[in-house]
Image (cartoon, rainbow, N blue to C red; front, top):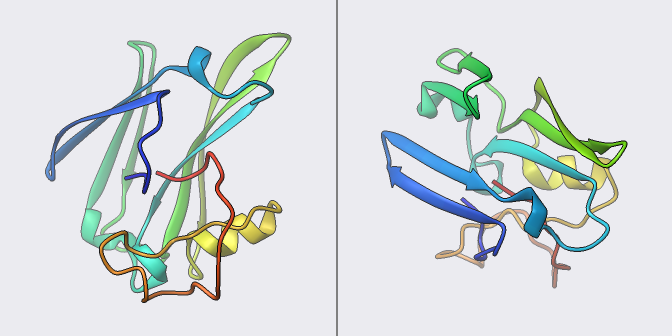
Length: 135
């Protein structure tokens, strides 16, 4: 889950059945993309403990991932993007053994993937800049 509360998303459910409602119209001005990711804090292991993932976008789009044999520490599972002033969605399955902060560096963001209750651990090397990314 995101380290910081965001006005454009709301979490529901519990550990076995997590739900998330995105309100794309509430994103910060100029936002044109939202990546949905599953990751392990500080790339401390693979996402296989999640076991499986079922993503539903409205009633029209479903995306299922079996993560039991996955050795990645972070996976982009989908992307909302804006085209011609309309939000679109594409299912993805791009993984990285190096975790969320490695994905951030790849797209030019400095992402803090440390556990919020254990801020001294992980891959953090000094202060990080806020961004609207995360899972």
